[in-house]
Length: 400
Image (cartoon, rainbow, N blue to C red):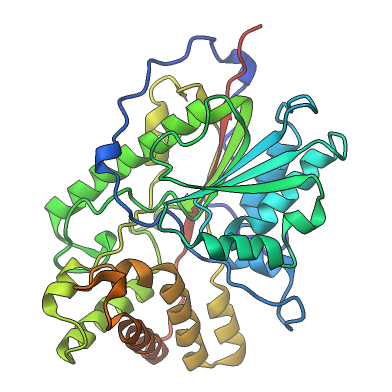
């Protein structure tokens, strides 16, 4: 598709479902609910933009988050998954919804593909999930007011929401026709260790902390996949877009991560925050290599009834850098990335203040950090590496 970066690895051939043995793997381990804390489970990467904006197009929203390829795969899945009879609704799950903008167009496209296969009054129910602390008011405002909302496009589509972590089972077994998750599974269920020398583990040289993050990342991905295996209906599909790793094994966004780390140090030196608060500040996200994404399915290629039907990695386009190359305005480049960071990760950093998100310094902290990050990036303009992975997981059909 025009504008889509070339994949670093060729598409992996789909697993033939007919060859999947009927025997499911053994039951999944006990739920690790005790270790799940209220960390974020979504990143806001698509920003609101009015339709009459000079730069608005539907594709610009998708390109901004590297979503084009993932949407293509979701539409393909919607065109082939088994549908329930009209007396039962088609069910779509959005795992890690945030404010709804990341999933608005992809789910709308999936609904259109499903609608082409069934009657106009066949109900389609979309369940948007996120942790309880998510701003669900913003989510429902998006669904009710945005020009791209699927609710406006399809009169038989309905929206619901669920405030629970997707690192446990949150929907009935064998109930989901189609699943979607974008920019969500890179968030860990909890912060497994303090990071003493940076705010992001991929930039840290603290080996015990790196091992703790690696273990947590493996456990969380295992659990996410396992519980989706329970929830998907036989023949269902789940499309996941998540952070991968670059050639150096990092989760991308290097200049931004360094600007955030340096900015926090500056705010501490100026007395805006304390050294103890800086020590607690970390972004509990990870990128995963292909072998880590495939690990739950080894060695048989199947796990909890699921198989990897498609997996590819690619470098998403840094549209802020492309604008900078066109206009040469370093201040705008820094401001755009600082605004992205404020939406995506500042809420997590704010929880480390002595008073948490209710700390009276929270607003000043965010404003000062945003300005500091913007200035730092403007001084040394550089493109961002944005390594992404997109997977299609398929639930095997039950034997006849």
